[in-house]
Structures are given as structure tokens and as C-alpha cells.
Length: 176
Image (tube, rainbow, N blue to C red; front, side, top):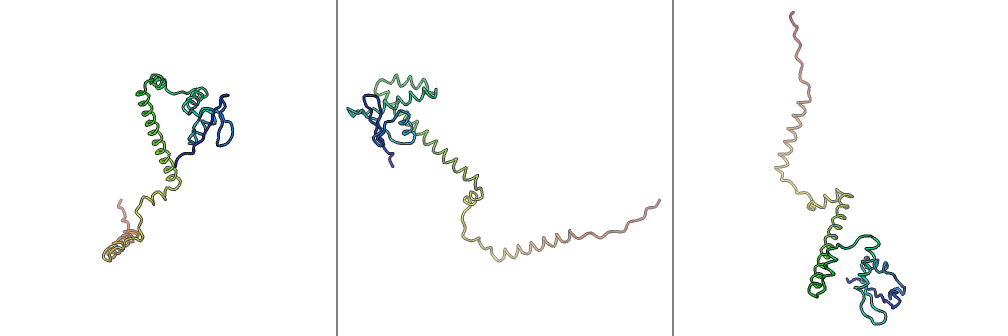
């Protein structure tokens, strides 16, 4: 399933217009839409030129100002240096793959956490799910049953013998 695409028009007065909701939006609104998983596309209101890259860059810059966090200096330096097409293409490919791996790892961790919550909330169900499912217990052979019955009787008789108090022997008188 592909993400829903939202078209934003940017006008000469620097206003951004969401064509899906028929309302003006701010950079914060566009950032929220992107974080929610929407596919946002920004175009110039007059020429129709795609401005999505520029707007996304503005969002990153504004976000860095507000949160006092930014991309690592080495990465920013490499982006500035990536003026030739080959370096730019490689850097784009690298970042796309790195972010894709990060997303997959995050999904794996999220799945693991939800499974761990299920285990904590119902450990008996978890153990039952680990055990193989049997429709009925296997029937032991008749010879085995007879052996087990004799063994149980033998153990019971031993217990009874141990429980009976031992007969007391009379005490001897001491000679003084």
C-alpha cells in the first residue's frame, strides 16, 4: 500500500496551501504530515516546479534551530562538498540505505518489545505456545502401566514401614 500523497502549493507571498484540506499550512504542519507517514509534495503555485527538496531542507534547518540539535558536522560538510553529480548520487544512495536499515532495525525492536509485553502479561500462554500441540496424550503400553502400578505399591509399603514406630527396648539399669 502506497502512502497518501498530499499536494502543497507555495505562493509568491511564501504561503503554503494544502490542496487536500483547502487550508494554509506552516512548515511545522508539513513536518508533522511527513512524520505521520504522508507523502508530501510541494510545488510552486505559478510554475508548478517541484520545491519539495527545498521545503524539506527548510524543515531540517528550522528543526535544528528549535531543538538545538543538528546533523553531524562531518555529514553537513560532505553534503556541501558534494557538488559534483557522482558524489551527490553516492551520498544520496548511502543515506537512503542507511535510513532504510535504521527503519528495519527499529521495526524489529518494536516487534520484539510487543512480543516481550505479551510474554510478561501472560507467561503461561507463552509457554503453552512453545509446546507442541497434542490432541490426546499418548497411551502407555499395558506392560508399562503394570510395572508403574507395582512400583507405586512398593514405594507405598516402604513409606508405611518407615512411619510405624520401632518397638522400644526396655532400659537397663545401671550398676553403681
